Image 1 (cartoon, one colour):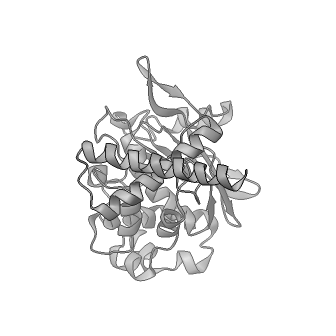
Image 2 (cartoon, one colour):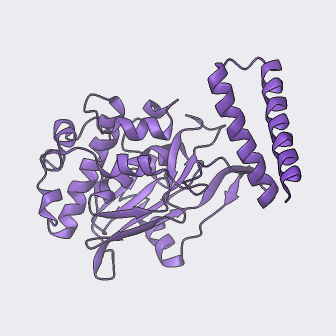
Length: 297
């Protein structure tokens, strides 16, 4: 591109930006002049992406679309020990149920089996606690992001998704299924993950009486902790997450006085205590932590 053409191209982009600023002004967007400039630059960047890819994106340039931002993963992976100790079992309303079943393992390690759905508000709440608990034993990568259904109870609850996520640990194995998205399709939602027959059989058997109360039969989320404990439904009142963003939820986990931390970290402590019974209390740095010990009593 020659200098004249490049200059003309830059001028056209400047004019496009100015036109967008004028459009936003006409819509009376309540932003400061500085904020308007930032918004316009972001809009221009997104337009360029759309032209290049034929689609749209709302992710930041450093985070792939649909993947949890680094600060969110860091927030759930680095809950301060003092916060955990202060909270103990926190505001957990329902603890895991002990079952008698064959050990659930994979690669010679205790296995955690999770089944939920992205539309489900109770799954939305429980995922946070499961993710916090498992982060103590290993590392998450490609954790998804989603929100619960816009038309269900506690609509649009900000959460994570285990669909496509990878979990690496020397102590545990994890398998997570999200059976549908949060997008309606007929009288249900768009299908997503289909558990293999063996895992579906575990859910069908242990997410039903006599292992769980009759009123909880078939509830999601369902979590099987190494064939020793099961969770059917949410462990705490997930309504406390209403109106919160993922960033806000992740940030709240370090505050021992936060209702969000008391619920999520408290549930994570309870789950961690039961996982430790399956791992033989290793690693000791996790299993002997004050918050975990308190939650397991």
